[in-house]
Amino acid sequence: MKHQAIMGVDIGTTGCRAVIYRNDGTILASQAAEYPLYTPHAAWAEQDPEEIFQAFVKVTRAAALQAGLQGEQLGGICFSSVMHSVIPVDAAGTPLYRMLIWADSRSHKFADEIKLGRDAGQIYNKTGCPVHPMYPLYKVMWFREEQPEIFARTAKFVGIKEYIFFRLCGKYLVDKSIATTTAMYNINTQAWDPDLLAMLQIDAEKLSVVVPTTHVEWGMQAEMAAQLEVPAGIALIVGASDGVLSNVGSGSVNPGQVTAMIGTSGALRIITDRPQIDEKGRTWCYNLTEDYWVLGGAINNGGIAFRWTRDKFAATEQQVAAKLGLDVYELLGKYAEQKPAGSDGLIMLPFLAGERAPYYNANARGVLFGLNLNHGKRHLIRATMEGIVYRMFSVFRALEEVAGKSNEVRVSGSFTRSRLWVQIMADVFGRIITVPGEPEGAAFGAAILGMFALGIIDSIKEVNDLINIKERYYPDETNHDRYQKLFGIYERIYWNLQKEFEEIAEIQRAWS
Image 1 (cartoon, rainbow, N blue to C red):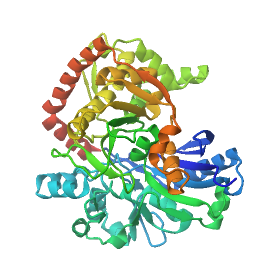
Image 2 (image 1 turned 30 degrees about the horizontal axis):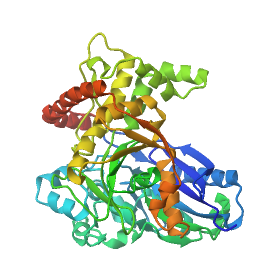
Image 3 (image 1 turned 180 degrees about the vertical axis):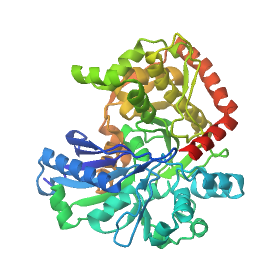
Image 4 (image 1 turned 90 degrees about the vertical axis):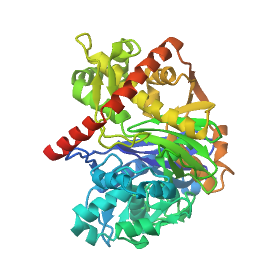
């Protein structure tokens, strides 16, 4: 009866999901809740830690009640969370400011100064993190320079998972996976880097204690256990970042397997057995376990760009979908299918939130190119989907240049619910795209890591015994040729607008 199931909790950008899996990988319960994103100024992206914590409580409790497990049947809870978040908290653990999330680039000037100096290469070589304002290193700089009173009162700078863990068990712990996404952790010495902390004018006491991703805390505070409807002695496995756990959840744990994920953001990743960096600084390197590291690149503008198109141009479609009982994205996908590959020459550069890999340009802004009188809303919908895949393809090319040619591309994330979107990826990439049967990549990856931490399985590679391949998508060569021609134009548009991106971004910041 002992340890029949485990809960994987994924704390995402726009929502939190709790899924309980039996040890054979079947789902017993699944619950989700959303929370808002605040963008008070251009390039700012904030969230309320308390709203996220309450969503976590809601879904965890609901999943536990739905599963109806007794005693130690639920072996533990393992956590996945977004990367690059920063919350300054006081000595009591109370947030002093809203959480700055990965999409927040208000610290761009500090990253730009680093890029122009001699430290950029050193920081990348030490941390595996390209210079970009998404990283907590630069967010802490912003607090020091722009919010000195808050900086002075801050007892700890923590991420969202650390904040939730503190609320559960009264300890500030950060897993090595999240630590490697801060640009403050040295992947060579595997410790907080003293030179970078000196640059920030803080010491390691201002940061959480780093532990392996398989670290287990036994039990939580009794009142929290009661609130969550779980045993007080339950195992809390600290887990890893959503990025690396998406690889595990999709079964991409062998050499040559690439995972492509599009959720709110997007990323491509491949597992290696050691820390590895790119001579050109285009990819990052984050930890998964003591034996595995993940090489990859992430984009800012995944589903968040598609949601922008939905919210700004498809109000009527949202009403229609609600009346028909359809998911609005399903309806938008049907509209996009009515237009040909390449959207009749309409190209979207979806840089609505600046951009990460492989350009790391926080000043990049969205562009619609090729508009003519023939184009309409349905072209725009398809061009948005295609533009996001172009972003992914640019990262894919860089990743293969660093890690070698891949032998499989597996996909995960909410975009896999759209057959058209996955087919567009197959056509743009010119590769067979594999869709695993488990749609909740990060939550399932967290559950697998939890099973490994508790000794239920002997290796994370056993994930492939628990999942099946749902479908394979094959590229259409005619569409691939068309997309390659448009992608070449897409790339040239980006590089030809560098000065203009910088100027318009400065205007937007000044005028907002």
